[in-house]
Length: 258
Image (cartoon, rainbow, N blue to C red; front, side, top):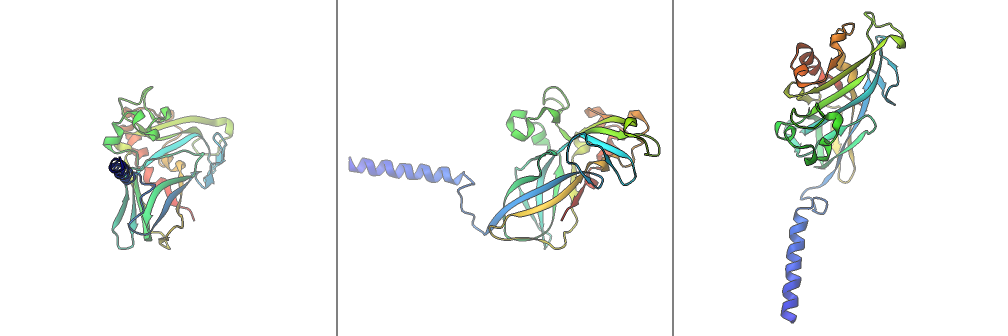
């Protein structure tokens, strides 16, 4: 009986050890590390969006509001001072206006001069069912009533904007717009410039990367007094001249905020 008890205890220790190897929250890192967060602000030009449907005036004088402003960030990498990369695998940020801090994971201590990431989802993730990942299970990020087929929306931006030629109209003259950006046309890499000073990740001191996301940048070059330019809601629209032009504006949305 004593020998049997010893065998049972040994088996339990083996099982416990195996479970802990798969639990990232209990594994002691082999190198000194700290937690990394993105802290993301939603902007319309120089205005930080405090609430949906609130009207803001851009530096040009044109009025704009947002009824929805959200996107996916994935494929996040940190750029070390020597130019080498540290990848944070498997992280998808579903960024909404209401939330600013997003936990990315543990990173080794050291100096990082910049970050890079993709807007949207890679092909494999874009083909998953919505139930496969909590970040995907949001109907406002689908092109259709169901998540599949057709893939996911990578950027969803809608609201009201002054469409007068000179951009000096009243709130009563504002018109609705809606852009659901997705497909490979919207899958853009954002390569942030070097941050001065470099991010100094220290052991057990949470590191934040503060950035602003200016959704008004999507409208750069768009002739707003043409109603045909105020809506992209499907994959075909993303492949149009207008869709390609707006999607090409995506990387310009991001800037550091210190």
